[in-house]
Image 1 (cartoon, helix red, strand yellow):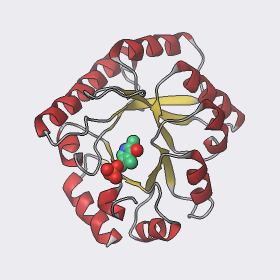
Image 2 (cartoon, helix red, strand yellow):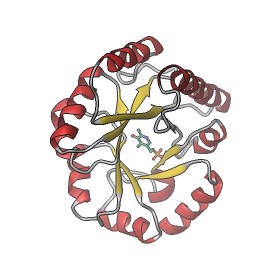
Image 3 (spheres, helix red, strand yellow):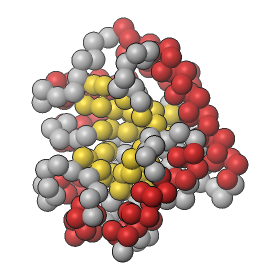
Image 4 (cartoon, helix red, strand yellow):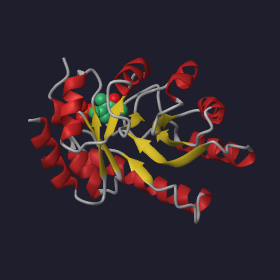
Length: 220
Ligand SMILES: *Cc1c(COP(=O)(O)O)cnc(C)c1O
């Protein structure tokens, strides 16, 4: 089942985007099944769970931390994490810089932008996004690579709302790229789309989609 699900989703997203298999709460054998089907990008939202699974899966898995990250936990994932998706403050970015330097690594990160209608604690609004980028420009962040933006659409069945929110994130991406990352090829990722809305996200320019339940089944 897992292998067939992955194949189906990969066909749907085509070449424009890469699939992150969101394996949070799922047991290691499920991840191994996905791995055997060729899946290499895995997404987790809890540090402890990611660290534990990392030791149990092959070394060529690329681990994406997709959930909110507390500063005091960065050190546990800094040695191996492939990308941190939900950076939403300068203090978190500074901590990642510090821990990446300790590990002699450059860690790719995405800035989480708030695009939904719903109230949530996480994500930068536009003003905060530019403030953060201005601060980064002034500082020395040699061990983090801001690789793009991440966002989550409103949890709604209204396709139009979802599409508008994804369009908005793509527009912001284009503005930020032009203003802060001209000619910097690593700023290229737009992480958007989950099980319920990834086809729309791909149409609107997602380069990374984060799909869980459609691959592994509903979470308990
Ligand atoms: C859980 C989660 C997903 C995947 O959700 P599904 O609906 O199971 O595809 C994607 N992104 C984030 C940030 C998540 O926490």
